Picture 1 (cartoon, rainbow, N blue to C red):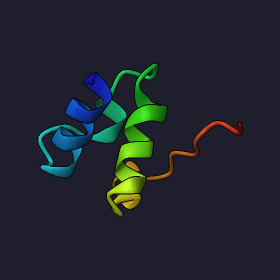
Picture 2: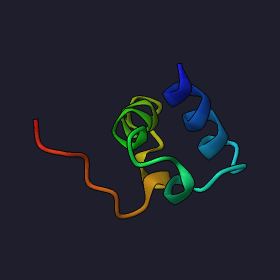
Picture 3: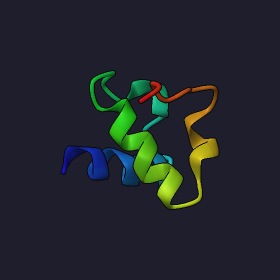
Picture 4: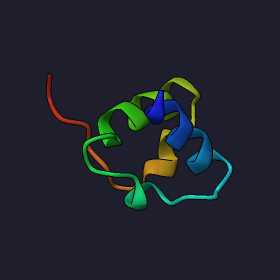
Length: 49
């Protein structure tokens, strides 16, 4: 739930991806990628599964 919240804030440019808590970044990145805006995460590389 918080991941979606932060993803929306990043999309709306209210929060920078770097400001998202590090524990939530993988989930937020997944939401951004699903929305087609993964570029908003900058240089972030999701952890290998």
